[in-house]
Image 1: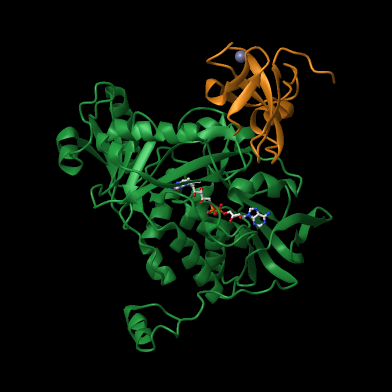
Image 2: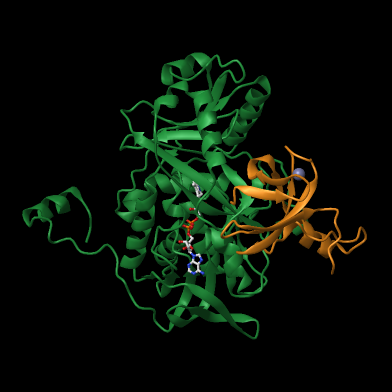
Length: 416
Length: 88
Ligand SMILES: Cc1cc2nc3c(=O)[nH]c(=O)nc-3n(C[C@H](O)[C@H](O)[C@H](O)COP(=O)(O)OP(=O)(O)OC[C@H]3O[C@@H](n4cnc5c(N)ncnc54)[C@H](O)[C@@H]3O)c2cc1C
Ligand SMILES: [Zn+2]
């Protein structure tokens, strides 16, 4: 059923009893052309673009829980393409362009809101670094703009501009950046893929990868064996676990990142604002809650919950930026398990096993990547060669000395 | 994460006093082949469960420790000084 204002009106006549389920709940077939492990944003987007761009519809997405139960439903919903390095920027810009047309493509309201992503700077050195980043973006044809104090004061007058330790001197804004309703992204892709014939199979945990003569022939699951010609892994925080089933050891550690939401407030923060002197970022949801987060907890973890020390740390950084936050109450907090790579950048690539493909290493920035990740992973799965914007995102780049290290911190995943 | 780590020198202390470095892996010989060094620097078992990690008791005795911890339950199982030899 196509969604439109008219369909809302028509269904109202019937007291909204005529709506059907947005996707099917199929049992697995014995064999598929392509199986994707992980029904997060990336797995579902991959299935959608396989069907839409490459006409491959004999595809299953296997999800161990329900779709949206992973990081796609746990993130702080920020989208942007303000990356510095040439190995990253064109990829994230493709993603932003896909976000801009996503709702029409999926016929689904994902509440894409290009409210601008603002990075504050607090010192001359930081200003120079952001100017460099902004220039790098513009050289890639991406919008970037430096704002001074006077401009910021008209936008966010309540910030602590004259903080003795971290005065706010200006900022770098990408106006096309913003937020997207994360659950709707999972649902929209699932519905669109399902409509083209893809089987989205929930409560189906992959427990083994069966190989014959070196090639993958299928997967063992909680719903039995399912055969496939090609297998794509998109398991985010559990990437190391599923890759191990095929004997692969990845350049990845799993870490927990927390996020928080406050009680509902009247609108007062119109942008995504990122504090530059500590790790804190905030936006205000349409319901009025402040959605914010900060650093990862720092220790390896598969638990989708974090520690109180970070709760305190995030609140302190927030107060240093906006003192008025001191009177706001936390409503909820939660954690997600992230696939932190050794250089902070993702991997979309073939593996040493012929028909096994990997999509992993998203760290805490993979939500904004969802459309391009799906688009490029589908390209790789369908054609066996990388899409041009992912040509640097290779699995063997560490061994060859071509890491894509935006922050220059080396092989220390908890610092990226 | 368990809220206490039991330091062999200082006793049971809040985990905020400690700083984590990462996996405690045996260091290859200086002249080991590049593939071995690549594995050591970049690849991780990343297990769900028991894991040996280097932690620094930064706000205590300032010794490097090897903490055995569960990455799913966050329970700390053991903690020893990093200089201490373990029987093979
Ligand atoms: C608190 C938090 C805040 C974040 N904020 C942002 C942000 O503001 N902007 C941004 O760009 N990114 C952000 N991220 C990162 C982003 O959410 C992730 O990088 C991205 O969602 C990962 O891709 P995914 O959606 O496919 O992952 P997931 O939704 O985690 O999908 C992976 C799926 O694989 C399934 N799975 C795992 N193992 C198996 C198995 N054996 N069998 C079957 N299924 C399996 C899981 O159940 C899961 O549903 C944030 C992350 C967190 C945790
Ligand atoms: Zn000590």
